[in-house]
Image (cartoon, rainbow, N blue to C red):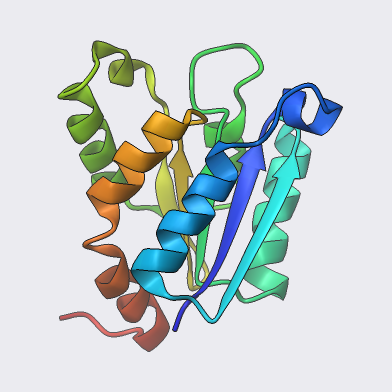
Length: 160
């Protein structure tokens, strides 16, 4: 059973002006699909240092298998999630981000504005999701079929 963390990135949620809907949705979808033995959920504002620090803590200190972020993947000047994620990754897994964009592009051309990334730090898979509930559902559902295999590969250190 994997351990999972969901990190919501939202200035307005931290400020108390908007309820976090996307993070709990990601938690519910991941719990149903992967039946984790541990599932954490936190919220941080869109500050690159806080995002990176949370990702490092989850990967290095909490030994989380999968970290899913929600929010901060667009092109707004306050969207820092992809940069903060790249800064802490050992390597990227571009196929996951490409798959999410391809599926989302079938529903909206706005998906082409997503800068979401996916990659690995140590043995932890990190995946950026959009901040909208619709985007979270579409993107997670697109990659859920490959996540068990990806997590198993990271845990075992083996290939095929």
